[in-house]
Length: 198
Image (cartoon, rainbow, N blue to C red):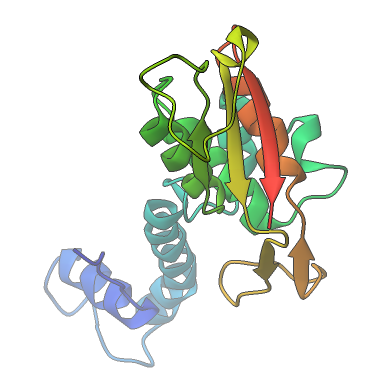
């Protein structure tokens, strides 16, 4: 549903329709009362547009002006994003943290990374056991029971996008530091996570 957009002329018509009828209450465009009301209506139009924009800005994936409030509520910004993250990167972190309900499964970790803007796969290691080990599989000891590897592209690029980026931001930002930092923070404490880029 799209919120209605009313112009100053719409507000002027609405205000005039609320006024009493009679010769003392003229509605002509050159009447002093009409000109007085017309002086108020641009403020109503601006407030209406701002209220409509609040509907867009209230969601983390489209937030701009309310992005600092979302970040503060979710414990952001943090060192993961670096000294000057882009608007897209900040939104991605907010969405990932907001949508992250917690979990330890491979599906949860890949979904969390996808919300951050990274497409990954996860390799889980298990200790070698007779009957389970096949030719070509790595011969892992017991210390590998709680290890897993994140497989990600070597270069993750975030191009500048109109409507999603802000003026003054770079045309493209490259890096996987946010992915590593965020996944290390949510990784189960008893596990060891490795990162492989190809």
